[in-house]
Image (tube, rainbow, N blue to C red; front, side, top):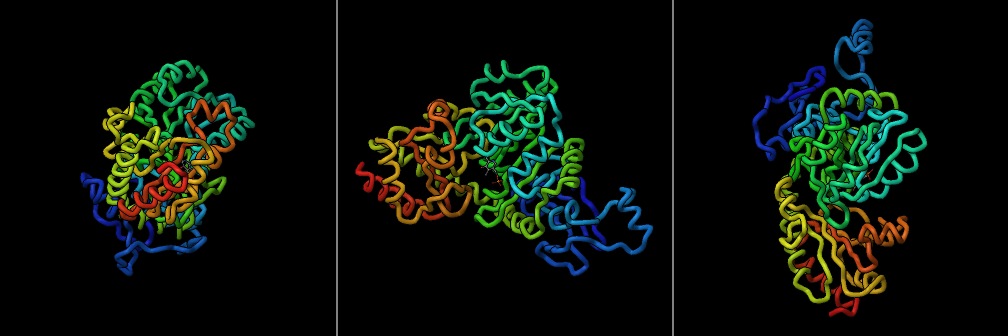
Length: 408
Ligand SMILES: *Cc1c(COP(=O)(O)O)cnc(C)c1O
């Protein structure tokens, strides 16, 4: 595969170019040591030794490639980077300490004072704070627009716009951004399109193949898939990733080898998990949609979703996250959430365990009332990340919620 840093004694596993995604997720990026271990090795070492002074000098000068120090070169992290790069169809990936570190590294590496970012309003809350509070301090402005309103994007892009940034589907209302349309718009203005592919993962959507320039991930979510580790990754072409890598080397928001190993194991089951999450979420969405105590269900897999067709064009599945509005307000929503037996009350998502959240008072609690209204984050909205428990058990548990809220 592209961009392998040869490690001493390693045997890169045969090229698998042309293989399908399910195979790539399991086989790409493996480097075996002389022990010929079957499962990927963890290298919990901060530094690496050189055979002699000349070799050390050649490594440091960049004349020869290889391991130096785990802030920026570690074989386990490298295996994760090569595998996810292959899955996203990018030339190279740079792993980071968290999803936010992936966004930070992308922005600091590729933007400079005076640049402008056009960003979807419906992005992860912390991404919003990052742009508005911290990038602004260094003279990078951000213009927020409605994800689905192409005219707003077009109007917002100016001479100094260098980056367009979005998540699709959005959290929690599952709105879809037109990746190809936005990539074309970005390129007309010499800007880059960055897609946070956290909700779909490459198992369901590959933004680079639709024209995006860079993909960022919170590996914390579906890439791990079992709620164990915090991590992130940036994927793109060699030129952009060299810049991101340069920032990582200089600033150090590095992924630990142990976490990289957990994510490698996560990737091996990603395709099969995303299919199962999608199937279960669709079944739950249809079940909720048929209820008279539910006002509306937001899930792109439903035919009545306004952007069902666009979702079908750019995704191969609809993912595991959905939200719905029940009849009532905050009181009913909280009673509903307190009434479930095993769904976890947590803002996290992308886990085998189903989770339930009240966005208006948690993930989106920092928004002003006006922003909440504008974004559709109403008091009666509940978000579920559908896990891999039995669908019938999840329905039963949600049914307890309806009863507790006095709705059924
Ligand atoms: C969680 C999340 C992030 C941030 O990732 P961390 O790993 O928590 O830093 C970014 N984008 C999306 C869409 C997320 O869900």
